[in-house]
Amino acid sequence: MAERWHVFCRVVDNYGDAGVSWRLARQLAAEHGVAVTLWIDRLATLARLDPGVDTTARAQTLHGVFVRHLADDAAMTPLPDVVIEAFGCGLPGAYLHAMAHAPAPPLWINLEYLSAEPWVDTVHGLASPQPQLPLARYFWFPGFTPRTGGLIREAGLLAARDAVAAEPRDPALAILLFCYANRALPALFDAWSEGDEPIRCIVPEGVATAALDQWLSGAVPHAGQSHTHGRLRIDIVPFVPQRAFDGLLWRSDLNFVRGEDSFVRAQWAARAFVWQPYPQDENAHRLKLDAFVARYAADLPQAPRSAFVAFSDAFNAEGGPAVAAAWPAFRTAIAALEAHGRRWAGALQELPELTAGLVRFARGRL
Image (cartoon, rainbow, N blue to C red; front, side, top):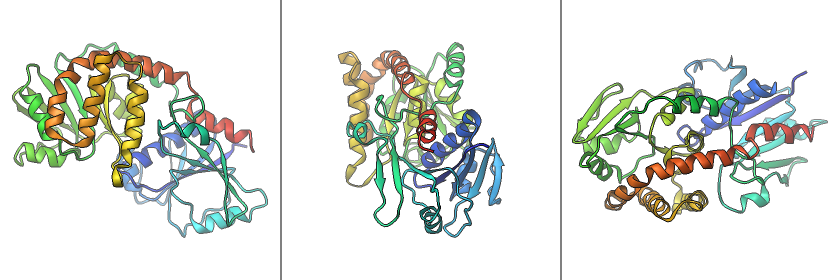
């Protein structure tokens, strides 16, 4: 009989929480023979990632995953073998009560946020006894070293990427812009439009709307429309399902990504990229950004390393003049960054794969 896993997700970020949880659940079902249920509180968010989701159904099966709407009063028995709490989202009280009083409670794992900070290596896989319950919760940290849980990478991903990489590329510089709101964007659009080369900027519908509205004086194109200003052409594309997003990354020369899910996919894409972590109070997200930039850029030659660090810093500081000033050196570094991205993805491929590691970890304790 297949093991039964429950994955819990409450949507906090725009799509990152749902995106990671949905990838994990699908991979558990497709590659590891797990009977998996995804409990998620916002079906509408999941439907943006997979249009097969019925937002009116409290229970449905899609891609081998049983999807249920998460409400605190939902009936959730019988208990599974493994519970994955995505990003410390919290389990319903009745569910925790049932776990605490079960003769053999499920293995409880908290899937943490991705970080390149060194302390992650020291706590990955550790258990934390619960102070008021006879339960322990294990912490699973994605990461960039063999002492972490690695990154999600489904079977066939890199082969599909390489097949696209062999296709002819557009002579214009192709940029995918999938970022959070950023006050530096109008100045960056100016730099691109006033430059010496043609640039095609692909913007998913609903992204960077305020900056585009400011830069275009309200004439923001609708999905499927374009706007050309100087050497810059902006193409607004419909919000694509999760499975189609990789193709946008693979066909771009430079990817601006955000949060966690698109951040990881940009690394597997092996193109030049700029990461904008989810903004947190008191600039706490800068610790994650600085740790990743330092780790990622450590083996780069001096010139592209300096360009990458300067541009990442300026973009995340949302300083328009600084971003515009950093763009020429960063543009020169894109070829070197792409070559580095291939090496980086190859090194990541040698690390434990996150979902497979979770399965091994769980089966060793069941």
